[in-house]
Length: 76
Image (tube, rainbow, N blue to C red; front, side):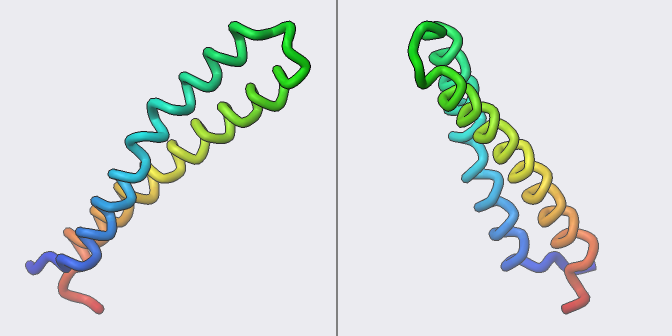
């Protein structure tokens, strides 16, 4: 059983990209909840929710790519 290193590195890269988003999303949401009087409140809150959702998607995609590289490494 061989591991496809190119696909493995791609999966690690995707997971590394999702890491900062894991921290930025909740900070943006928290900032929105602290400034409820601001007229941009719904937009900032929506942006924070979108960032968190995209982070979850990237984590799923990265783990999927890692699993693909480990178990489908001999097929290309």
